[in-house]
View 1 (cartoon, rainbow, N blue to C red):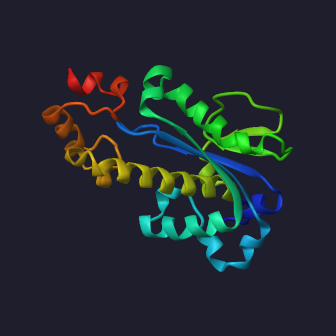
View 2: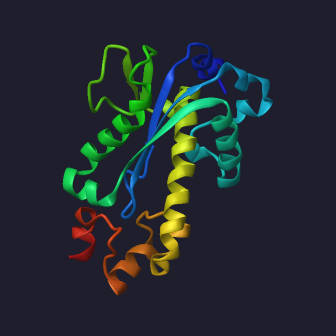
Length: 197
């Protein structure tokens, strides 16, 4: 990993990322966090990376390390809110909910992705930011693990859709189950019109 990737620890950058934007069911979840410099004591911190590039086992291990060495906050927007707001506005809302905890701080904020809203002059949107900033990558890991845990719990009462495996995303088996068994109260109905036509 490039040295620049880890510089945000010393610069006290608040990182923000979201997960679940493209799923057919469940919430969209964002995390905002500020890493503590003491995380450098643990050699494992060098394994922090874009959550999509990590195995589930590795994400869970790193998630615990990050939680113990950061201040973090989660922002959740439900499937019902997503249908009311549309996914872009729901994503923005989840990020703003996550950032509320840090509203009194003057730290620079880095958010993964293209600019989708304005916050202040110290907020920067970075495309592929989870590959360029340890703060954003850490937020992506926390958000991913948190959302996965939510969806696994939701799957217990909705076993037909295999959310414990697909995490609510549109796999073939998930789509086939929707066509066969119908839409649950946890599906994003606004996402399903093309599938159900």
